Length: 163
Image (cartoon, rainbow, N blue to C red):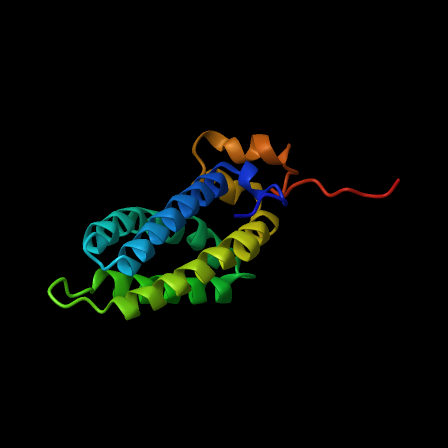
């Protein structure tokens, strides 16, 4: 997970990143269960799905809505939403009586790449693209304003200038 740009200091990004870590760990447990003969795989799959549903909803109904409205990252957001649909479709559609574990493993690979794209691409870009009022709408108590510093009257972070 990203630890270098400071985007995790924004409360929503910090929360989503922590959830990514939990999801990646659950995906690893599912992968291990499949590799060990799949006896524990259905329970591991259920644990992963329990984490994925609320996480995806938080991204799509909060951060992604603001990014669509802002516009500059709308294409990336649409791609990530399509990936959500794909990954959820595979993992949520597993036939418990005859699971297609190779398809699940392939979806876990896509999930890993998806998380990497959000952590190292979308999240840092979102911090730059969204004005403080957008963060305030998706962050309780205006915590984003405290992290980013005082916003200018137009709602953007102050820019550094050379003296």
